[in-house]
Length: 373
Ligand SMILES: Cc1cc2nc3c(=O)[nH]c(=O)nc-3n(C[C@H](O)[C@H](O)[C@H](O)COP(=O)(O)O)c2cc1C
Image (tube, rainbow, N blue to C red; front, side, top):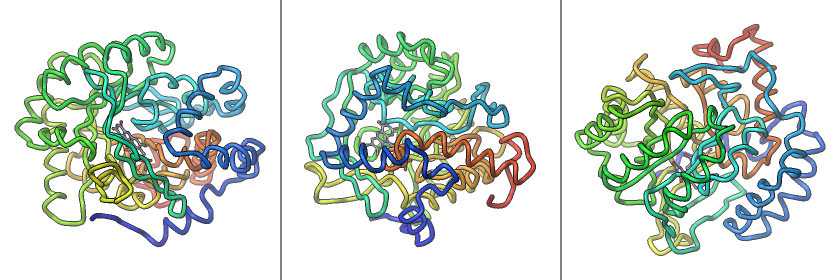
């Protein structure tokens, strides 16, 4: 199926994943040589649960976060009525259980996404459903939204009110009423809602790829919305048809009331190691260049009508710079965090700051339109 291998970024990510002056920092050495080998020696889902369990211990995340908090006012940004200390966010899916938003924020993310939350609890697809591909800094997943469901998610999110101003909440469903209910009950707990119509692992979500149905849904949500609403789009393949369809979904979303778009979800793939259907989504380094192309084209199509959050294959400050220069207001990442560890957000923030100093700018919004840093 689709994949966008790219010589430049895969080699760069493979051999020089995060070249900054802090590369040899103690935290990085400990993560690379101790924690990562331990986590990667286990099955991907088990290691995720273990990593998450460690993050839930306040002493651990306080120690891990030392020096990562964002303090430089130059990195601060505002869009869609949000005010964030840095444009770097954690993407949906890392904290499906809605438990570790505060640790993520303290590690240097400007915002973090909880969920995806669905109305009822879901077991997801049968395992095996997550495969790491370390040789190309990628992950394949066919999780299919395992999660505690709205009731439990709401209780957990309500307890995280201190993180509310920097928390996005991702929601999904296969019929309108489910989504409307999640939106109604969760928006008071977060800074923004992210509507996921694009997971390649849940066939029912594709009903909202029909523009009329998407428009009606967004209009219904818009009538009740009290916080910004972002729509997370599917990526397009190289063919022209899906590309036109994605641009149409982008235009439909913003013209029916969404404040912005997340571009994009994982790329559909087939792999025989994955679950029963052999289908799933690819994330990580192979996506970087394609994400950049989608951001540029969609931003050109929607103009000033909505904000774009770039997501897919972002590993370095240079990647963040590129997405912002192409018109994104912010970025999200997930896979890079798995490969690079909890020091990554801090390193990206410091790298971005250095690049801004070199370009003699003092506001991340001024990166728009500049050449690669
Ligand atoms: C294991 C895994 C689970 C994910 N779960 C979700 C999810 O529940 N909801 C969602 O919108 N995206 C989910 N994603 C997609 C990510 O949010 C992101 O769009 C994608 O991984 C591309 O970004 P990356 O290359 O930085 O990982 C998941 C990704 C991975 C790797």
